[in-house]
Image (spheres, helix red, strand yellow):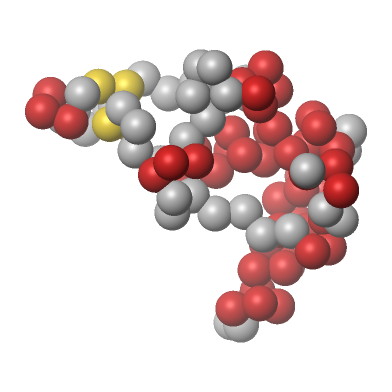
Length: 90
C-alpha cells in the first residue's frame, strides 16, 4: 500500500496505539531505531510502555516508508512535514 501512495499525498502520525510496529509486523525488517520497553505497571522514564505508540516512534515510520519507497529518510520527513502543514495549517 505504501508504494502506491505518492509522498506528496502522505502524512505520518503516531496517535493510533494499534499501529505500533511490533516484532512480527511486516515493516519491522525496515526499522533500525529500537526503544527499550516496559509494562504499564512498571513505568520507567526512559522506556516506552509496551503497545503504546509514542511520538518518538515516528522515526520508525520514516525508516519503514523510506525503505519501502526506496528514498532517503530525509525526503520522507520533508515531504510528510510539508503535507501536514498544508493539511492542518500553521
